[in-house]
Image (cartoon, rainbow, N blue to C red; front, side):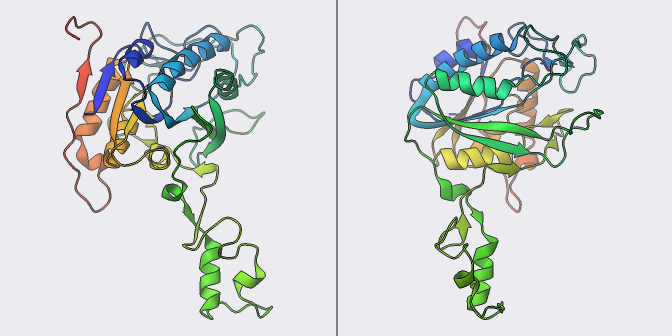
Length: 328
C-alpha cells in the first residue's frame, strides 16, 4: 500500500524494511535557502559541512532500505554565500504560511558572493560513504527564476545525481530512450525521399547510421545527460513544484511495474503521484504538516495528474503516521 509517513526523516526511514525499495527519487531542502518553520528541519545548519553530514546520515538510512540493484536519483541545487538573513515565518512566503525565504549568513571558509558548491560537496561525501556516483545529470530550465544580478549569468540549471549501492544495478535505458532525427533522415533516404549530393543514402554518408553510434534499429538513442525541463507552477501551492517529468524519467529507468518508489523528502507529493500513475507503489516521508495537506489536496485533484486523453484511476488512501501517536 502507498504510505506517507509524517515526521523526522532520520527517524521514520528506520521504519522502512531493509531492501524493500527499488528506486528513490528525491529533492531534499537546499542548504540555507528556505525556513519551513519546523524545529527539526534540515537545511538550516550553520555550515555546509553540517548540512552535508546530516544528509549523509539520511542517505545511509535510504541505502539500507534500498534493494541491492536499486537506484537513487538525487536532485540538489546550489546557493551563494551571503550576509543575508531569513525573514520571520510568513515573510516573503512562497509556499505554506510557515515558509520564509532568505539566505544563510556566510560561514567560515567562504566569502560573500562565493558559490557554495553544495551539490558536489554532497555528491563526493556520498561517494566517500560507499555510494557509487554513476552520473551527474544537468536539469536545464528554460524558464528559470529571474535574477537581478549583472556580474554573472542567470542560474538556470540544477543537478540530478544518479547513485547506486552496487556497480551493477537495474537501469532500463530503453524506457527513457529518445528518438533520433538521424534515423528519420536515413529512413527517408532509403525510401528515396531525401536525395543526397553524394548519391549515397544518409546511412552510407553519416556517422549516425542505423546500428551506428548512439541509436538502434528502432531509431532510439540513449537518453542524454542534459534534461531540458521547465518548471511549472502548482494550482495548490504558491511555488514551482518538482516537474512531473523528472521523477517520470527516473522511475521509468530505475524501476519495474509493481516496484516500490521512495521519496524521503516528499514535499507536495509529485514523486508519489507519478509513481502511482506508472503503476508503482510509493512511500513518502515529510516533516511539514502543511506540505502533507498540499500533497493530499493534489492527490484529490485527479484532473491535475490525469494523462492526456485518459481518466484518472482511483487514488489509494494515504496513511499518515504521527510520531507523537502512542499507538504508532
